Length: 128
Image (cartoon, rainbow, N blue to C red; front, side):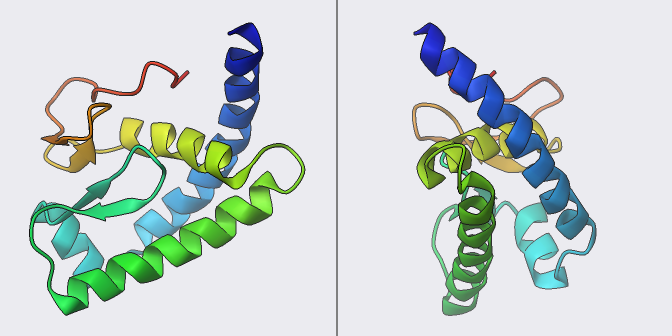
């Protein structure tokens, strides 16, 4: 268990750098993405990718797929020598969920979609 915790802490530091880059992209969001996020149509998933909450239009599905392709490319670059892409994406997901704002959707550890309240979001116990 200590090895897993240490690895997640190391990945967490690297993922913070990635989510910092995502934070820059966050400030330059596409208006359609911002609108979908504010409307609760999309949310952050535990696995580090964006998910569709409820039913999807072809436009929404296309936008989410595009964002997730870019995220996977970023995770792949960052994880090159330190961890698997999946491990890096998971830690990034922990950080992205932690950075949601009140009213935004996120995926809880049980897989259900939650709306962020004023308190901290529910996160996977492996998130550090």
